[in-house]
Length: 329
Image 1: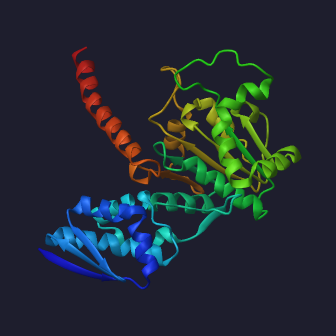
Image 2: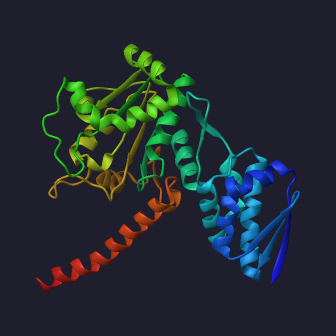
Image 3: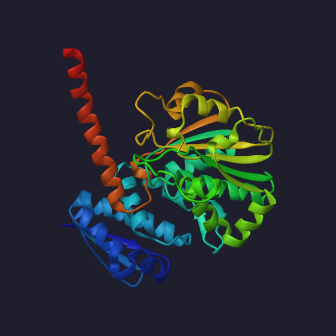
């Protein structure tokens, strides 16, 4: 049995790290099979040597975040445990850096993982950024946050959000209402992100002035978009022709962010995804960045990571079987 002693600067940091009903510390104890006790600002970790060492590094990382004013939640604990496992806990300080945007309710929006930080840096640095990754990695939400921040700083005059109107495996039929009512279900995730950042009243004001536009991809044809921050969401459901059309809308003083998940393509089997095509064609072109987010960047419920991992594993098992069938033919 080995022991490690960790000292915090203030008792408030200890309280933050422990979490409600000590849930954060219990997660570390369960992960590393150690016992953690505290007296004042001193923490003692008891367990097998390697386990106690890893648990101590995880706690020290959490204390670093707490000292910078970060609220320690379940997602941060999970992610820090992953960083410790990969030997990257020394990068934990980077998680508490720049605020991307402040929401209408005063909540700061920050990148929560190193992958998300690389994504945000790419958006700031490049004219076109392609963010590819599974559900829950914050691709769309962070892109909208970057767009709102650029709009508030007056580096762009408009925010344009678009996505292809493709059903996710089901037919919605003839929806009631005018054209806007018919396309609203496809665009709802974009509305939700904007409402969160701006508030409903401010969003409506900018919408009426033409500073904000949320529209299906088909509306982009024939336009040149200057001084705009343009986001194409669910880009895996664009065709090759649609993607080319969208990319060539780029005007002076504009930025484009394209987001998508190549594992969730809802196009007919005979159609090539415009996102896949763009990734292969545009790689290594200056001022175009391709950011690949992974399951470790998921910031939703812990089960989302496990679901993604299960589907990835199933896909890998199916591929060899498909190749064998093809060879027999």
